[in-house]
Image (tube, rainbow, N blue to C red; front, side, top):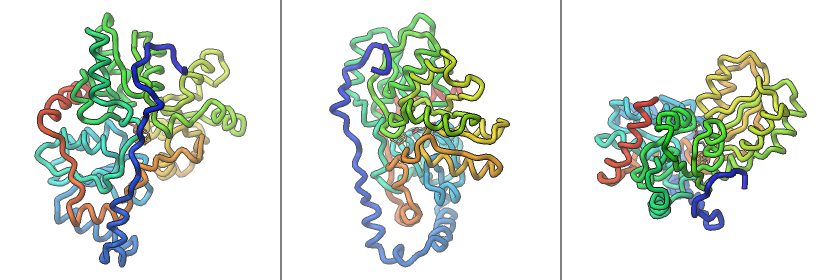
Length: 350
Ligand code: 13P
Ligand code: SF4
């Protein structure tokens, strides 16, 4: 195993990935109006409908360039939650994946939250069910439970804190020293937090299939080809534990290796002096990095690190979403109330 923590009863062999069924693609193709529209017409139509509906378009950093370019706000999971909580728009079109839209629905119960494609799931969020989490908590009475934001709303309702890649350390530090912590569902982020804080953190054996595929050998190859580059790694990467070890042993350059969420990567790129950056995360990240820093070079650690769920959202689907008000994302009030407590604890720290 890539960590030495207490493990959960999650069996990776049972993992279930949400299927990308592209229901909306099928409908969009069958939709005569949309099939006649080119990209320029779709962008114009989206702008008109956005105005008419008093809508805001939020997009995650992994969205396709066309979506990032038309969004009112592009950001990481934390910034998107903050943006949703602050908007007074009547409609929020969430260009991201389901758990993100659910978080927005919890934070904005009076507004309509739309996910342009219901197939935009998340393999990591699928790795923890309510029943499993309840059993885990029962096995560790007195422990504080922290869920990464990449979880279903019903799972968030079972935990004490939610966190994102950009504030996970802050959340762990806010928990009294004498408390044991149950961290789910990402084992790589959990192991990283355990190593860097020295806290007693129990790990759930979940992973994101995209980030888990970024392995130590990819890092080795890229650094050999670009020896002066900065290395920016998302803490969900499958190479994190090995990279932490390599850093401690001096096999990775301490002054040029950074473990950051997607928002942290953008900040680093704006502020650092290095000219070449190796990016260890989903490749959608490269669009904004390049756009904001035209004089720097950004290279993916793996070109095939592609989240198919993030890529289901396209211009025709956003147009259709605003035109037909599909697909509304709602969370049952009793779940939303409990999940909101854990989300608010995180937002208060942020
Ligand atoms: P960030 O919060 O760093 O944007 O990460 C979200 C995510 O889904 C990572 O795969
Ligand atoms: Fe989920 Fe991984 Fe896609 Fe992020 S990159 S949305 S964690 S499947």
